[in-house]
Length: 451
Image 1 (cartoon, rainbow, N blue to C red):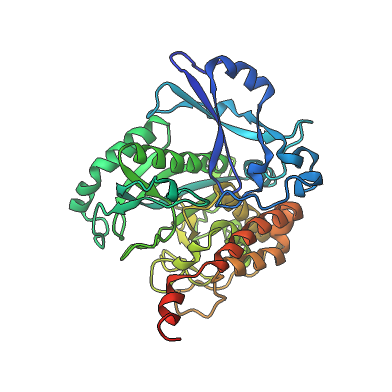
Image 2: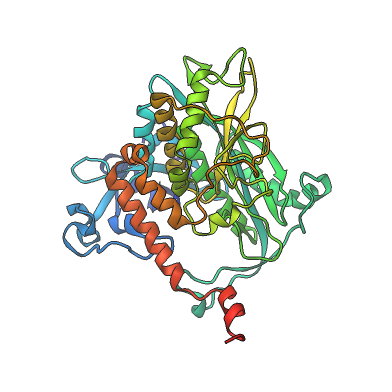
């Protein structure tokens, strides 16, 4: 395993981010690691054909596995190939190593549904620029009061745990509320720092039991890798200490607020921020990138907000966007320009995302949108000083609407490829179909007594 230190380890986790940005993989005994580095680690290809309930959407036992690939037929194996630069030891499991993998077919070709590979391909189109991303991630941490692990709680999906709040909320950045959360923050900080993540801040968010962690700027691929590792680590560490951490956008709990994932982005060229202008808030490059993000915001929503639940966040006057506008230092706008003339930290903050988004797809959608802006140079509409009243196209109100916009977006289809877009939409449409068959609390309240 070359320079990787295996001393004292008993096993190594080989992991990959699936289509939902959830880490999957296998744990190998240390004695098997050398062979796995050379030959890869096989796993059932059907993992790439599942929706968020883990139901297989495509007919895996038909010719081509339902996707026209012989390797996928009969849930045949595809391979995890370790990216050894991502190796680290897990601080909460110090006898366990961890490595992130890319996906490969048996003939050496990349798996077309490997979202990390899709981001790498998008980044290749950016040359000579490099995308730099800063992550600002909101989430909830609750105390578990009942695990709900009875046999009747199993299913696809099973029953989530019952929880209690750690704070009652509505005290943004209040120090004594931070102190209430400090025991949790200390546990998370120790373990996330042990993973080498570039931690920047720990903050008390507005809602009950709601936290925020920000990371220092990173190259785009490293930022996406950091996001999947952060989410997985937070959930694992919290659970080991009797807490439930969730990156679900809007949990169905009384008084709980929505969580967002704000993605800060800038282009770097020869080590200099290409968004910086000496006289204006954004350079011409920055303006074209911003215009591209606006032009493709509706289609990109399918990647930045990939769950049915995430669309409950788009509410006016809520610090979340509801329409396609940009503003200078305005937290009500979809796209917030931060910085100014001569400021080396000038960047664009996209406030659209939910924290459950697959980071490889979210960031890749920004690249394809921004590149189209650089190529087409559309006119940049004026900034919106009153973003919730501006006359502008609304963001999609449902995941269905976002998928329809994605299917029609020529730049995003060209960037991701028709094969991936059609595959992705089919998985998401399967989730929507299941959702529409459920009888909601609203329906029961509305009709059960009336009729």
